[in-house]
Image 1: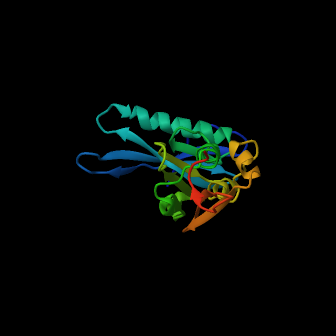
Image 2 (image 1 turned 90 degrees about the vertical axis):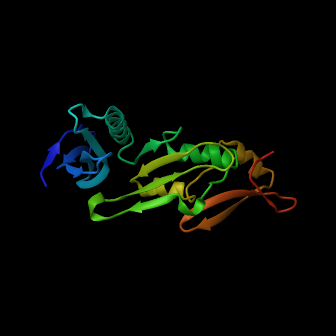
Image 3 (image 1 turned 180 degrees about the vertical axis):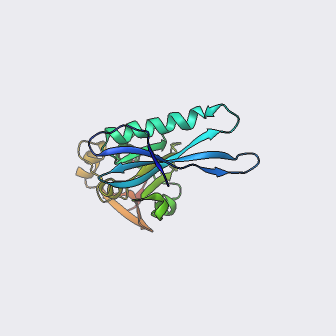
Length: 199
């Protein structure tokens, strides 16, 4: 497939666009241009750029989303980008929503989707879901293993958070494992029961 260099470079990051493919669906069909990040010589799928067949050019929302993803990847060294959600960084979201507020995932067994087929190049993991206690749907595409480990629970830190003070009072974090993901709840030091919120 021919490659077209369409992006910027920052250190070792470049963006390329590969040959288009067509979806001929009657109502939602379009022509798509797969965009890849190239980092340290490895290609990683980012997303498809859609081109309208009605002559109106690229749809504004996907184009803006692609440019935002590229800017984020350049800024953070190709670690991740946000597809949907309030927080730009998934670790910040987890610290505030899960650790500080004690919220839990609506479907903890289905929040990580590993995409490692040859089409995706070096691969990535999509981290997506919502919360039981607050409305905060999120979706991140993660390329960095250390960040992915943090999102799975092994690298979360409580330093400088309200939860740090709660843990100092004797509360403990209980980690429940669900198919590779981790859900954390607080255990009361007096009765040992799990709670979702810190009073």
